[in-house]
Image (cartoon, rainbow, N blue to C red):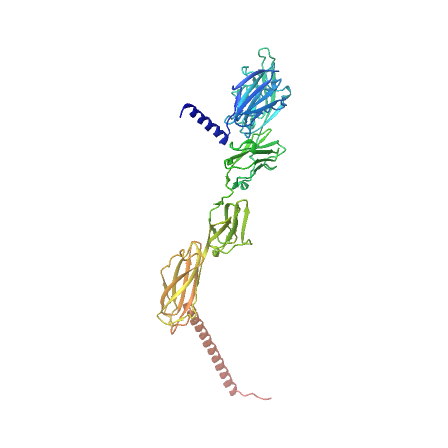
Amino acid sequence: MDRTELTCVIILVIVGLFNEGVAYSKPKIYPAEPYIVIQEGTDLNISCRGFRPIHFSVMNVSGRNCSPSRTKPSESSGVHTSTFTVPNVSRTDAGWYACAEDGTEIRNDEQIVEHPNETISWIYVYVNSSKPFAVDDQIDGVTIIKPIWSSVVIPCRQTLPNMQIPTLEQAYVVVDPAVAGFRYDPRIGFIKDKVTKSSSTDYSCISPPFEGRVGDEITYTVTITDIIMKPPLIDEDKLRHLVRGRNQTLRCYITDETHDPDEDTYYLTWEAPGAIPAERLRRENTIRKEAVLTIVDVRETDSGEYTCTVAGDSLDSASKSVNVKFYDPNEEYINVTDILSSTQTVNATETALWEVDIDTYPEGNITWLDTEKTEISNSTRYSHDVSGTKHTFQIRNVGIADFGSYTIRINYGNESNEHELELKVRAPPTAKIESAPNPSYKRNETREFRCRISGYPLPNVTWRYSEFAGPRSDNKSVETIFPPTGKGSLQNPPTGFLSFLKTSINATGGLTCRSCNEIDCAESTMTILVAGGQPAAEPSAHKDVIWISSICGLIIIIIVVIICMGAKVNREKVSKDSRFPCINV
């Protein structure tokens, strides 16, 4: 390949990159100097050249009406040239001028300290005048409002670059700028960073006579406020899985709660990725409330970071950025993300809650299924709420029966997807021996008993058998404790599993199943009757019967004794009366 072919290839590659719009290129500004000095009364001419249409920015100066200006754009062989002209300039036209390709926002005012130059070209224009300050005489007394911890500029810009630094007065007392925390740039003014409320006062800039110029003085009032600009709001749920091949609208906004309209006038603007040509961007910027950006005929290369900025006349700006991706409209898509954990552990009687982000294309149909794969409908206990792509699932007043796996079934387009939600319910244990049809057994007969257990954490289970005492008072009850049968397992879930005991029965008694976890214990007892054995009475009840019988017998004996003694006394009295008969008068 000869030199000519190589040169052509390089040019084609460079032009191709610009045409693809990988990023905004930075236009070239002329004069190609950091600053220029022109004479008051002459015309100002600035040109910019780039590979896309170009727009200019004039510095926004407090209390100044911009001088009439004109812009003349042209295009030749894919190169765009734009010339900006201000006829018959005055000292108030001094300031920062900038150009950038259409679609790049430029903020250019007196409070800008840093001038970003990645995609913007800047030049400062001094206007040689008979007066020292590049401000209108009517500007005196303007109030500058800045948020705490920001940078404040006292915009005492001079009309020439080599003039003596003005004297600074703070609250009408001359101060050393460095001691007061200020630095000076003749193209900006006095700058102080990280201001506090103590910086709220009047500041005066005093310029002595210079090379035949008269002296001058200008005063600004600085107010430092606790109010910090809040970023605008963007409904990001509406920016999920956007597709190309159609017009797409992006909105950002502020509210009276976030931005008090009585405190400032607010301006909202959108900044799009550099890949998008200006002719495919439509902007509707609304003062105070909303900014709308419409991307015409969306393409895959339009994906990227979009930024909405809110700025005030007094406060600093604040921005909110979102990453937007545009997809093929013919490709089905799903993305499921757990906002809260998919496994929830809650106490019994409390509420279980899951939050899941479900983003699909086309829009999906969401069905919630219970542990038995039956569809759940909204009720006083169950609810499924939707906000954008966020889905909230709730079960109120949960019990151990709610323990298990729930399913979110998502149908979108021709596809289907399932997402599992796990619920673990902390609950005290329960125990219930399942009674046999006939609780009577033969002596030494071996039988298997079952006890139904529930609870979480999974409980341990213990069996014991208490034989009732025999008929003789010296017989005692006998208790046998069997080894714990352990906890349930995945095959024995917390909602209910069986514990088994296989043993031989020797005498009538009580069989107890006891379950315990870290919350509490529970037990169940069943009476076992053995044919030919003792009646089904507890030992303590047997003793009570004997005691009551003894007392009753004693009472009967006492009553009999009393009756007999009374009868004896009566017989003795009758015998005495028969020896002494009555005398009739």
